Length: 115
View 1 (cartoon, helix red, strand yellow):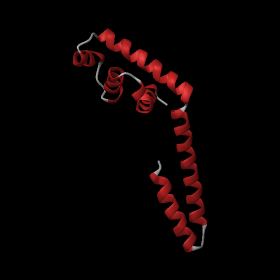
View 2 (view 1 turned 90 degrees about the vertical axis):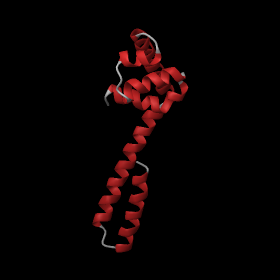
View 3 (view 1 turned 120 degrees about the vertical axis):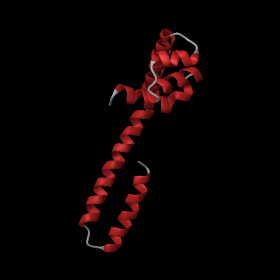
View 4 (view 1 turned 180 degrees about the vertical axis):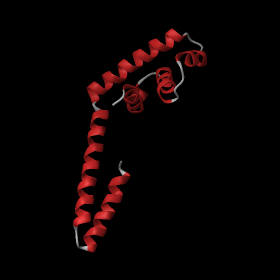
């Protein structure tokens, strides 16, 4: 997974544990694609201060993930759901019983809502 995507995901999960300013700067940089200079201007701080806040915030996000593993668990669960969906679709395609096929279709709809 690309580093920028990973940091954005970690901020969605753990951003509430950062300071308001750290959370805002991470969001502006990774989700809104603002440059360091643009962020610095918006917050009335130097470009170097923005960089320092980003690096400190990124480090904290990775520390939280190392301890709590929420992102890892979420990704594993998502992969398991996708595999279950594939297996159910295969069984549904191969079944001759219309009622069973209908029930499996309903189960698939509910599972897909979870992804």
